[in-house]
Length: 196
Picture 1 (cartoon, helix red, strand yellow):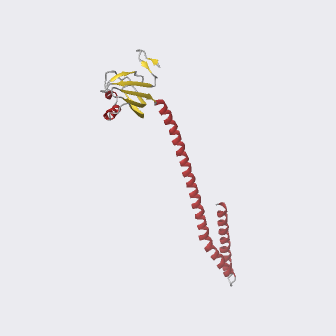
Picture 2: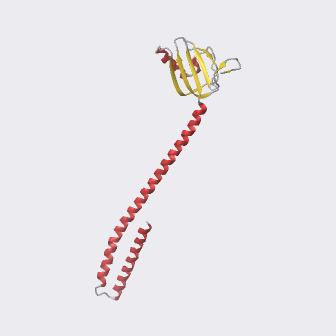
Picture 3: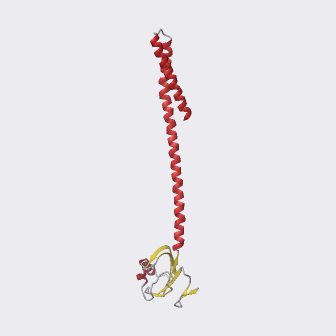
């Protein structure tokens, strides 16, 4: 426990304790976090405290209600607090615990975690894309191989048949050119399949 300059008792610099009357007027507060004045309604302090009306209607004595991560602000301060109400028949206690710094730190950690998850997802999608691209390329080359080799084999077969017939010199030259270019095309296809 520490004391304030006005000789008010203060629990902790990150904690503000308030005591309210039955009609929700601030009887006592240490003003560690917010400068809310005594003898004013808690509902004037912040709209969040309107919740108290609903809980008081339940008429349960010594009810303790916790609200984590509530954003509270006044003219000069903005804080993220855990709020605890202790509702009694004759008075209500409110404890505000300032978690602003911790929530900011946790938010940064969560942000880094989210970024690493997104990066992992991006890498996973890139890997999937590369695998699909590789699969498409292999499928394309296989189809190309089949679609080109089938007619190429027919061409080479017909050239061999033609060479066994009586051809003129000019026809033999043309048949040799067709045969040579067909073998050259066959070698290119073999090289392409080897590279892939």
